[in-house]
Length: 177
Image (tube, rainbow, N blue to C red; front, side, top):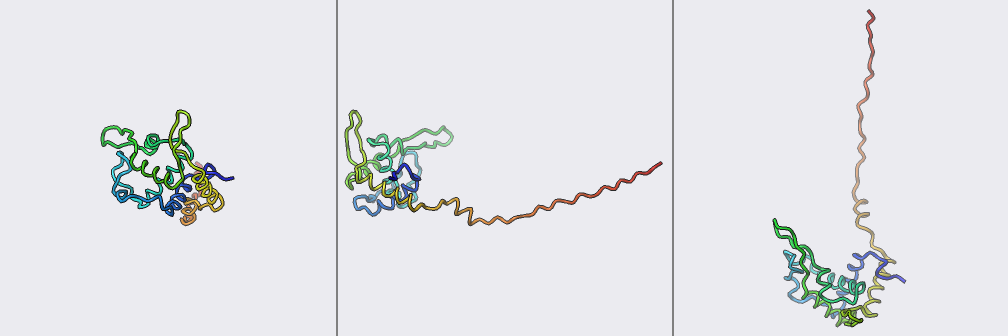
């Protein structure tokens, strides 16, 4: 059986985001087009569907790392804040975005809250696990061709023959005296 560990993670997130768009419980709020994804960012994301990509990524991380909470996910989605001439410092990601996505995924039935001993947080449900495993099986069956191969095939490099200068024959003329 194919699991999410067996396929390319980036392609898994891309296809899961496309499938999450179809789920009614997961919708980007109105403020999502104006908000930054963390303190370290200068601008909001350019991609209009970034909410679904982040939701797919969070679902994948809950599957791999669960039980996991908002604070660990904030660290996971954090990055370095550039401070001009001063050295960069790490800043955690936006907790509000992660919290809202976790609530939406829980409402859709993909994750649930549990307590395992001293650990508490969100884990993936059987519905969420089968959702990701079906996407992984589809990726294994119908892989997307690599972009690097496409680029190499489209670039035509003309063969240039190098013209080496012919060696001139040295004529040895010795004058005998």
